[in-house]
Length: 324
Image 1 (cartoon, one colour):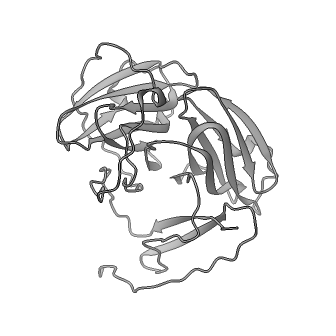
Image 2 (tube, helix red, strand yellow; image 1 turned 180 degrees about the vertical axis):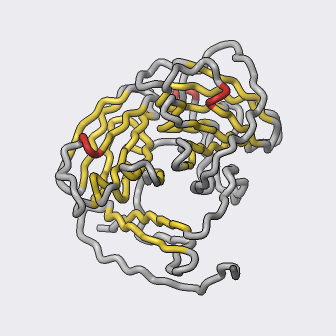
């Protein structure tokens, strides 16, 4: 049986650097998959008021996200967006990937299948648009939910930035879902680190999602269409402690997408990454390093197959880091 493995690379810099929150242009000529209207949310008739692009928030945090390429559609699904009194702010960067102006519908959900607020964005050809949730008066107080973006007439790319003033996250929006997804590494009271697994149903019907954790725990959850559920690992039944590092496989009756949030219990640090819809027998990590003056990297390897597997890590190349 062909083995599948998921690789997560975590990089922590001792010298702070800035990675701008821009959506990647490099589509590389990859084939586009367009979802039919039946696969996306039902769009309302009429139009919503247009908003001017918001200014970039002055946040002394830095984050990075996965470049967007490959199978792009006119829909994007965001499992997590926050705008709360606890200090969480969210910005959504949307790029029109066509030469003609795009009208992009944005729907906000708060755990149910009914949209609670909508926005309509008009974006020139090949241009980005930054939607700052802090400027949206129609969202409820302490919003914590999922978002769907739709441009049935063309292609879009979407990235998300979240910050609470202490830590900063970024992740790429998903363009379709999978009936099985893998989350490479999670924590539950692991040396002061905890994890949240946020799962969004991107199907048109209610989803029954089972989370199978590698420590033997499994839980079942029901998620309405386009809504999300956050599974705080401290409440999932794990035997939490400093020795517990584990992974998860999600199996669902509807396509889903998911992200994993790692955070320190003292609020000092955190990171976020997207789940993978499947694994690979070969995976490439473009940049890993061990340098006392620059970087310390960790690689988490998740066996997403059914049998035991031997994994060989081959390190190649040489350092190309700039001089200090």
